[in-house]
Image (cartoon, rainbow, N blue to C red; front, side, top):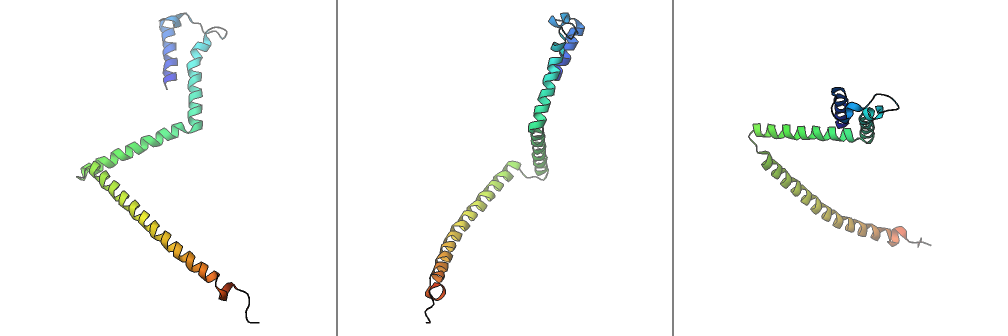
Length: 134
């Protein structure tokens, strides 16, 4: 957007007769490129921003900020302090993570017991040994 503003400003200064822009001419072999340069830069910027997803990312960030502001406003309207609510949510998330890690430890122990039992069955004479009836 700044490139467009600069380009329009250069044209207005030329038409108004201010500064060095007053002496520029509109001939192709002359100073026309000086008038067109900001608009060309704007086109390159927009192509890059759209091609890399920069524009979409900024749009999503704005929407997320609006959503959080609306949520905080609604919490205040309900009489709930948003900062206290966030602290409680953080504590709840920490509790859930702690419980999950405890569950992982228990599952590791159970997996070890299962492997030991499976190995004892697989390596037993009944199931895996040679035929001894002959």
